[in-house]
Structure formats: structure tokens, C-alpha cells
Image (cartoon, rainbow, N blue to C red; front, side, top):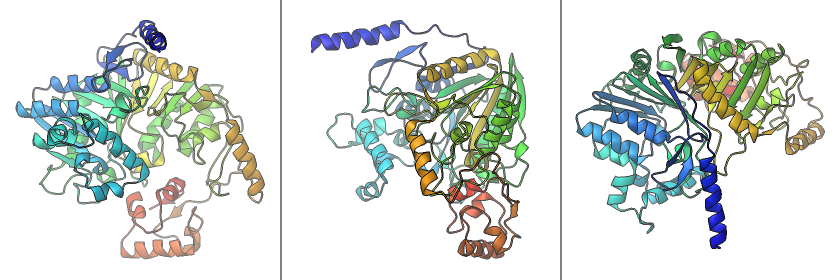
Length: 530
């Protein structure tokens, strides 16, 4: 047994000793990856030395520099060391403000037994993991000392740090307050794809082999960039807790055009989602992604948590037809779903109960360079980045989806700088080297099965796609509404009744109508207007 442990330990040490040389960092924009193979650190929670950049420490170091203000907007904050760093600054007289997504704006240690029973399977597993994280002495009980020491939101509450969530505007909350950024002294910006949680930075507490969901982080030193993020924060903050319900989330925020700032050798463009679907696509975050993809001359590489935006897949097909090399990695839980654009890129399609998506367009000249990364058990591909010509980087919190574009509060950043791009190139190549690319056998079998079961419905090809006309939600008659995927006579009547009571002006208004799901709305992208 000792020999086995010794060999394992030796192998672990060797992997650390053979780590890659670090790449040069830009003076103004520094890049970090939690699964990097060019650095190592000792985790503070699981007490193990591993390869990777310590994203939590980057956030703490930025907070520690604060001399006047710290603003944080993050979907989920569960790391106590970050919370304690904020508490220390608050105590020293620094102005600290926090915005959270309403789903994650309550200390988990405050849940009652009845509330825990009502959690779905996924959320219950998350709660149990966090319970173990708080339960330092592992006696299956949470003492007050343990809660005050480990529950991040209780640390914020005890320090009297003001925070709000996306219900502060008097609504039931936006689609998602999905930001992951902080601004220090109107000078330093941290923008990342990672939530401030153990699983998104270091790994699962009960799985020592986990390296954390694959994520990236930018440290930007620029008052001009900081001003853009502060403007976004202030729109959401409004009067803050206890003030007027004047916070603006989702499409309630005013439209702001893309802002491009030159910072040393960097050309940085910033945009914040969402954009109203009544406005031109080109003004949206997905429109900015499309514009950047179209600039490709040699190559496009993508590492995406989810890719469900049909228009961007169509753009990539046009790019591919110019003999530009395209590679894509999608997280395994989304890569082969019927709405995944990974399938389109590989020239195949899957249905949802024999119903194919409207406007689905498998590529006539497919690629075999699309697949899923081979990550440690429990880890997911949480990146949202693309690399164009090994020079331009698209990154941020913004997933390549209709929901991110039209519903969520998101950050999208495009950086033109080969020094920055080199970091993302290394990360993509690391993931791609061990990836499983092409259509898996199980998916091929599923396609063949559907062809037999759904023989009355032909799988769409690029030649078979018919683009229906655009439907005006507020003026269309019942039969026109029924041309939308999932809409029958009863639902069409509900839409008509709803618009008679109040004009429908947004995706959020549609979402309030009983019978309309987010999946339906996703399918209606490009098909509706208000």
C-alpha cells in the first residue's frame, strides 16, 4: 500500500515539476485559468497542491488593494475568504456594494428542513455539498461559529455589507443576473466566467480529483474600462437596499452601444446584455460576436459551455465556406442536445419528440473538429470564449444563446491583442488535445433510431430549410400565431387575451403568459416582433 501511495505521490510531483513555462502577460490586461498547466498553488479549503491559477486569490488580491470602493456583481458568491476580504474592507471604511442573482441571494445555512426537502435533486446535492463545506468538524451539525466562519453570505450579513438581488426592481427577478465582475476604486476590473464558488474555481469539496469547472479570469487595469462596468453596476444598483425600486435589470436597462477602448496594445470592446429583441440584431451582444467571427481570415476556435444560437452557427458556416479552419468544444451536457449548434456544424440533427427546430440548418459541408473536452469527473467546461486568428479573443460571462442575448444581465468582452490571445490559444489547445471530436456512436445510433421512428418527418438539410415569415405578437391573428413552434389554438388565444390587457413589448412579457416556456421562446428567435 505504501509503495502505491509513494508512486502516486511521485507521479503527482512529476506532473507539477513538468509544468509549462508561463506566457508573457500584458501590462494592462492579465489572464488566468483555473486549470492552467503553467502555475501551481496550494488550495486553502482542500489543502492540496495542484496545477492551475488560484482565481479566488486573484479576486481577493484585487479587493485588498481597495482604497475607496469595491463593487461586485456576481450570480453566486459562496467563498468565505472573498466574503471576509469584503468584510475587512467594509470595517476599514471602504464602500462595499454587492449584487447577486435572486436564486442565490440567501445564506444556505438558513434553509429550514422543509425548504431543504422541497429542493430539486440538483439543488439538494449542492446544498449537501455546501453543508459539508460549512461543517468544519464534520459532526453533521452547523454551529453558529461554523456558519459565521464559512457561510459567505452570513459573513456579508454580519459585516452589514449592503447587497441586493435582481428582485430589487420590484419584479420577480430577471432571467438571470449572470454577471461575474468586480470593480475596485474605479480603476481595477476583474471579469470572469467563474462564479465565486468552490466548484467554479478549485473543485468539488468531496472530489479531490476535481480541478474545478474550466474557467478564465481577466484582471484589467484601466479607469476607462472600469467606468463602463461601474455604469452597468449603478444601473442595477439604483438606490440600493431600502431605497426606491429604481434598479434596472434585464431589458429595463437603457440600450448602450458597444464601447471600444485602446489600452496599450489592446483594443478592447465591451458590451452588456441583454438587448431588446425589438432592436436590430447588430446592436446585441450576439451581433458583436457575429461581427467578430466574420473578421476571421485563418481560424476560429471556440470553448463554450453552451452553443444554441442558430444565427451564429449560420455565420460560422459562411466563415467555414471561405476555407477558414474551425474547431469547437462544447460542454458534454449540452453538446448533443437537439438544440445544440454543435450538431449543425457536424451536419446532423436530432429532434425533440420528432419535432425539428424551425430554422435548424445542418451544414452541407460539415466539420469533424467539433466535440467535447475530456475533463476530470465532476468538472464542466464553463468557458464562454472564442479565439479568432489567434489574435482576437471573445470572452466574458455571456453564453452563446438567445437567453443570454435577450434576457440575462451579461458581460461580453472582445480583445484584440496577440499577447492576450496566446493565453487562450494555449488553453484551447490543452482542452482540444484530449477532446472527443466527431459524432459519437451513441448519437449516430440515436439519429438512425429517429429516422425510423419519425419517418414522416425528414431530418432537415440546408436545402430543405424554409424560413417562415416574421410574426408580430401584437397584431397576428390566431392562425398566424399557430405558425410559431409549440403554439396551438388554446395558447394562441391566451396570447391574444394577454395582449388585449396590455401590449406585449418584450421576451419578459411573453414569459409571463401561462403555457409559454423558455424553450419555446428560444425557438422563436428571429421569428417574432413586437
